Amino acid sequence: MPPAADAVEAAKRLASVRAVDERVDAATRVVGIGSGSTVVHAVARLAERVRDERLAITACIPSSFQAQALILDAGLPLFPAIDVAFDGADEVDSALNCIKGGGGCHLQEKLVIYNAKRFYIVADHRKDSSVLGTAWRQGVPLEVVPMAYVPVMAKIRELGGTPVLRMAAKKAGPVVTDNGNFVVDADFGPIDRPADLNEALLRIPGVVETGLFCGMAHGAYFGMADGTVKVR
Ligand SMILES: O=C(CO)[C@H](O)[C@H](O)COP(=O)(O)O
View: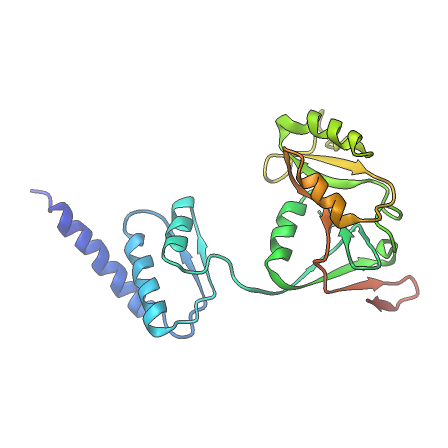
């Protein structure tokens, strides 16, 4: 006769509690969480110990959507606290606002930077500018849901911009981002108020994220042609 479901569940819990008790200690910081019915008990035990023993877990890395839900439901930290983030930029203005997305990954980049305590731009001297849209003439990259790119481009024209759907180099079709979206580069010429433009672009249905990073950077390091580094 197969064991009763309750007994199986009890066995899953037994194994999970023992493993978490033996393998997580005060030095543990980052924990990987798998999927299935057994790991549910491990997450519950981990959460219990974090609460009771004030364990300093900084992040749990999920292997699936289910694992992510388990981590969130248990009140465990999903992302590590990012102390400092470094990233390049296509152009940086005098207030450290920047245009990013030349590589088409500005959505993920904004996620990382938004969740970092501090963000520093690293760039060569060509990116050092005073007004966005003057040194970088390829437009503000927008990540756009594929079915929306035609109306999004029409709306950009209404806003005074010139949109171009970014095409793949070796494919008869558009660039597709890591998230399955298109990239529209929207040229507005010199951008006097980047934060306002950013908000206007984000209001267009189908625009998932923009390459305007306003008020996010804490500093910029520019490698200069004469071998020095300009920090601002
Ligand atoms: O935003 C980016 C990618 O989406 C890059 O950081 C930006 O395009 C600068 O790249 P590089 O350092 O190669 O000039």
